[in-house]
Length: 76
Image (tube, rainbow, N blue to C red; front, side):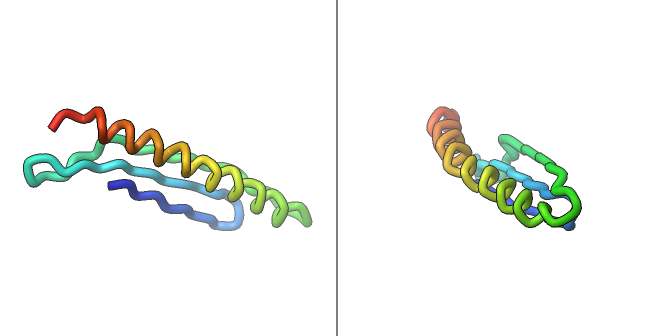
C-alpha cells in the first residue's frame, strides 16, 4: 500500500510518503519518506507554491514505478 499526503501551512510545503506491505496478516512499513520545502513570502508566493506542487506531483509517477518494483522484488 502506498500512502502519500501533502501539508501546506503557508510557509512550508511538505510531503509524506509511506510504503506498507501486508505479509502473513501483518502490515510492515517498507519505506518512509518526508520532504519539506519553504514556500516564501510576497507576491511570488503563489507562483512558487504552484511550481513546488508541480514538482511534487511530477515525481509521484516515478515513486509509483519504484513502489511497484519494490513490491515485485519483495519475497513472499
